[in-house]
Image (cartoon, rainbow, N blue to C red; front, side, top):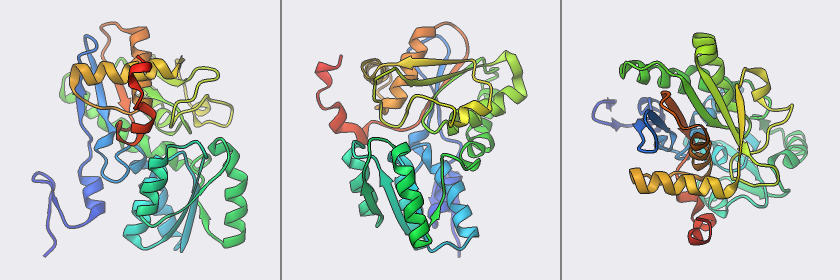
Length: 298
């Protein structure tokens, strides 16, 4: 007998766990009049929004009957793909930047992935990944070019936010999301601009010039963000992102990740009474080494 109970959260299969825990929660925050957080760390594998991307990309690998997959990732997508590879007994090789938090490397190795650290950024890793794919026959999922990266969020994350706000009898007026590959920001923007047009403001968040914030990067012409209408990009410093973590922790008791803290910092620059949703990509627990000297950052 196959047991699935979404209401009671009883599952016999990890993919059912993933898909049947959607929608992830929408939580009202105490940092503004009408501001809500989409808590993507409720995804079960990487505890991040990248579980969604990973699953859509991984299904493509299953359709291609690939024995090995390879990807360049700053961390969370690597964990998601490592989890899925373990579930489906596939070999996974992950290329991550040398400066990526060590927690990502440890977690991927526990899941059975081969992890190669090199370069300063995922962009620098792409030639190595392409070379590896060509020499081994591994399928490169290519999150930086694959349209599934943003369409994942068009079909899932954005639709969930819309339905959750409808349940609250609220019309979305602003959504703030960070940009790494630009995937979840682009998918959300595409959905909401198609439905609400100029009635909704889409705000992207990127590191300020010369700043490093794990999981996000300054946008260029290669980002998916260029495919959609983004009303404004806001630059955030690492210090501001950490202050955002502290604001949410000390008002709502929730420990959010550094990129999530950046969305809080962006909101603080705009704070008003508009119905606003902040997308929190992950939580704080992978970044404890980055945050251990918290007193010197706030």
